Length: 96
Image 1 (cartoon, rainbow, N blue to C red):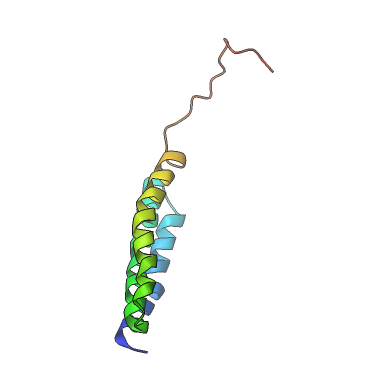
Image 2: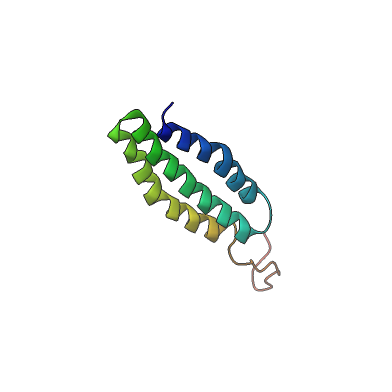
């Protein structure tokens, strides 16, 4: 095991569980921060592992994650932490 692998292991063993814990508990805004930070940690791991194994093609995973992670944050914000829906019954709509 070289220094690159050790750095990736430390991120996976320390930072990733902390991010998962934050993403699993609390208010929606706090979960959003945990999920965004987790995508950053995983992206860093995906950049460390190609250095450890001397395979530059593995960096494509990090680039793909860098493009998809903000989109995932937007989806989370829109559907989970989005606006409150009006639950009042609309009298103008016929009953089905």
